[in-house]
Length: 163
Image 1 (spheres, rainbow, N blue to C red):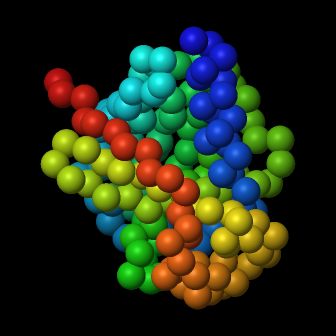
Image 2: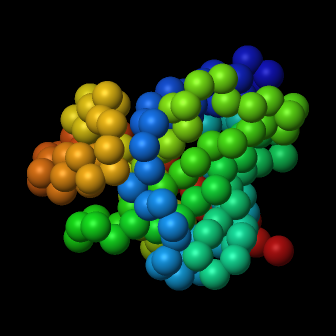
């Protein structure tokens, strides 16, 4: 099981390919419908948890896979530069006090909440190239490519954990 979690963390970190943010100062209020503890079952019966907490009116604190010794932590905020709602994640550390070893800490995702399920799709760096060096160019690339069906990777679907 440890190997499965490590692989999941590596897959998630592989998306941390951007050095520039879309949002420098969070101004959009968080979407409270995503706040909470979410989980999904992986192949082999393993469960991964995603914890999203409010970190004020305009930011989230995200942990994935939450509750594991390999958990990662990010600050998240919303971006509204197009008709696609995006969450900007800035991964800053791990549960074992690990810090990023380079400046590629940003990841971007779209999401959709339907009842007690949330579908999360990560931005595809094969479409929006990771060598972009300014926030304006990053936003322009996302907007230019928004109609491409492969703009985002395959969905990860989580179910809300009931109290």
